[in-house]
Amino acid sequence: MKQALFVHYFFLPVHNVAVKQLVGYARHLAASNWQTLVLTHGWHSIDEADRSWGLSWEPEQERTGKCTVFRVSEPPRARRDRATARVAAGPSVPAVAWRRHAAKTVAKMRRLRAMLFEPYPDEFIGWAGPAVDEGVRIAQRQRIDVIMSYCPPVTNHVVGHRLARRLGIPWVAFFGDLYGFLQPPLPRLSIEGFLKRAWHRRCLSPAAACVGVSPAMVDYLARTYARRTELIHTGFDPEDGDRRPTTTAPRDRLVVSHIGSVYPDDQRPELVFDGLDRLLARHPEVIPRLSVRFVGSKCEDRLRAMLAHRPAARVCSIEPGVDSVTAMGLVRDSDVLLALTCSLYRDRHGTLSYPTKIFDAFGTAKPVLAVPSDGDWVDALLSQTGVGTTADDAEAVAARLWDWFSCWSRDGAVPYRGRPEAIAPFTRACQAARLAALFDAVSGG
Image 1 (cartoon, one colour):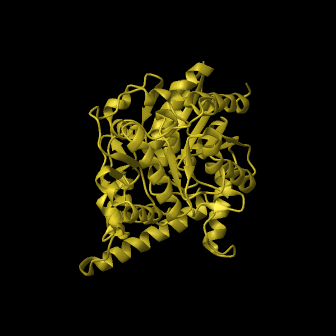
Image 2: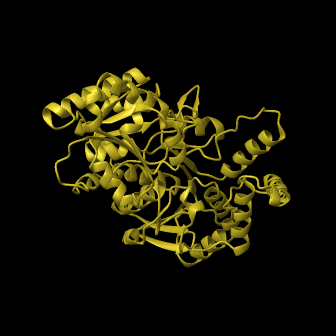
Image 3: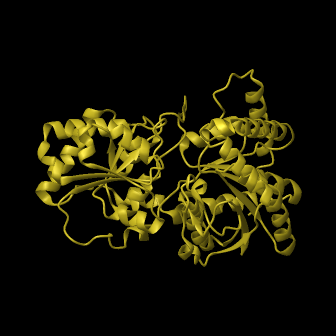
């Protein structure tokens, strides 16, 4: 059996959407004759800063049975430097203003030095050296046919770059997001913009292939970095929808849920709130029978501020993040799922980001309302599979929710028109088979 080394700073017992994706690939790659090794950080606990990456502590999820995990920790100094950078980015306090200024200056000088002499780092760059050394030791003990690093964070690609250079093993750069590699909105003649563009190309130069998770992302990577690029979706596991909901008692409310991060500056949650305001103004009888919840947004205070003094506040709840098992239970226990599309990550070729909630809906047979329409592949995906619909403005949000509420009040369920034959190719097993085919191609079959 051939072996692939996954490089990801985050891995079980910490969990987020990227970890779930990689665990799913590891489980299904075995069917294509690929065994998975994972190189990750030596996790012992998480703190609030780690939670900003959507991490939860879930040691009970470690029993995957399909991969061998190698753990290596970053030096204590690297962790202190990261903590210093976080303090520098925090709110100013006059008594320690000079310390913050000094910390910002030191961080800026380190970043400039790194931009000149090594692939562009992020806050986890201190892990790269120990991770590369451990990767070399792994390769000395057993055969590795392919290295795959996952971004974000960018440090994973730094490790993949260095291992590919030192070991001569084919390297696949997987982009779950373009975080860190999306060309910054800086003038092309600016020094920082020039250095970043040059660095990104240098970092990906030894990559045998890149992977993107949306058609526009694949096109962007191929155009920008001139690498072979493949489309592999996040996918879903059908068994996620086979478990019982978190509650079994009959409900007296239509439950609409958004489970996961919200980025108010890049997405438009206010469209949902505006639509709810209109719906409740026209149909006040809906108020005691509708529940709209945002769980794990990572911006709870801001969403509460946006809801202040709105009629929508009477039906909305803003809740903190939960572990992955509970999150999937909340998905299964919902009647409708919300997906907020990104308006920021676009270029002339389409949308460069995507809401993963759509694939959760595939596994649980829940209708999706995507807000707003992205005019691109999310619209096409919902149309192709019949899983849901989009709404471009508050009026469309109000109209769609009223239609679903009326059906639910009459029939006891929201209509779901997903087409199984169109959904089947998006299982994680199918996407893992596509990844295995890429591994076979870059490793010589």
